[in-house]
Length: 148
Image (tube, rainbow, N blue to C red; front, side, top):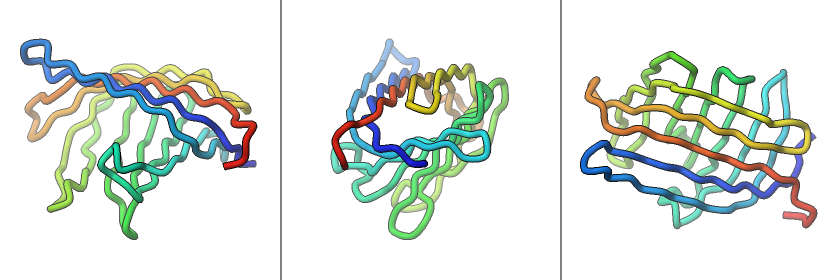
C-alpha cells in the first residue's frame, strides 16, 4: 500500500579539488511503499532541482543496492545504480544527449520499515574512468498525516 510521506533529502558532493564541497538539502512530499521485498521512495522534482516535471524513484534492496531512476517527458532521464563494492556503468541525460558515467558504491545503510525511516548511501562518480566526485545522500522518510 502506498503511503503519503514527507521526504528530507540531503546531498553532499565533493569534487576533490580545493575541498570543493557542495551541500544541498530539500524537503518534498511523495510516496513510499514496499514491493517484492524492496522499498520504493518516489517524488516529483521541482524547478529548484533543475528537473521540473520529472519523477524520481529510489528502489532500496536491503543494505546492498539502491537504484535511482528519473523519468520525464515520456523517457528515462537517468538511472544510477549504487551497489556496495560494485562499479556500474549508468546513463544520465544531460538534456542534449546521454552521458555514460561510472557509479561505484561505497556504503549503504537503511533503517526503512513499513512507516518510513532513514536511507544513507555513499558513492563515487567517474566519467571515462576519470574520478569526478565523492557523494553522500541521506534521505529521511516520514509518514505525512496531511493528504497530498
